Length: 279
Ligand SMILES: Nc1ncnc2c1ncn2[C@@H]1O[C@H](COP(=O)(O)OP(=O)(O)OP(=O)(O)O)[C@@H](O)[C@H]1O
Ligand SMILES: Cc1ncsc1CCO
Ligand SMILES: [Mg+2]
Image (cartoon, rainbow, N blue to C red; front, side, top):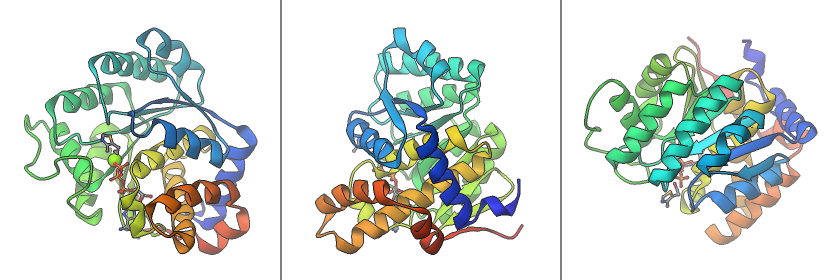
């Protein structure tokens, strides 16, 4: 695990690998994010499939190049599918990532998220409130911390860094906290990504999109922490380029897809703001 993986050049290489491999990304996701994350994966160069029937997920998770699990609009049948899919992914060696949407708000989804951690997620990505809540629950508290209700974060990403490290150490997963600066940690090392634009918080499911793109990167980059950081650069860069021309959230959403499609090595190497913090 070299620091050379946390450079603009390495991000560009991951982008090229996604486009060359067109990895099949299995998504069990929420009804808000399903369409927009499928489009973002396609624009980047991956091959998305939204498959959440309990009867289908085991075989599909085993054949996919990565699995993305998002509990944003969880239902009991979807929870059963998540249990089967994540177990199958663990057995097949399919890397999988958890997006614990609103995990601090509702006990049913908290149970689903906590149970899934038994199946060795390679990565977890959430906003600050979600990561703080999941870390707190994983520590063994029956109730989430008082803040952090709903899908939007009430905290800054930096405030969640200690929780992210703890969660990474407890689960063995790489944990990403998204925000103005994104923090990515394996429990020891911390990478930062400073791409993105404030207006991205006004388009729904861009956090879910970050998690889905991380799935595509996990499929082609064996270093989990690098894959997660690279996905945050790719989305952040597409978002900030899109925001320069956008009249508001509507055109930002449309332009962001166009930017994901047009991103190239030159743009990435000139504009990626990725770093690894000193130990
Ligand atoms: N203030 C900000 N400035 C720049 N970029 C930001 C800012 N806040 C979030 N982002 C970027 O927006 C994207 C989505 O992150 P965010 O933290 O809003 O996810 P989220 O809260 O899980 O979203 P959702 O639940 O709607 O999917 C990430 O790429 C992140 O880097
Ligand atoms: C708005 C919303 N509600 C449940 S999931 C979701 C998408 C952002 O997480
Ligand atoms: Mg979210």
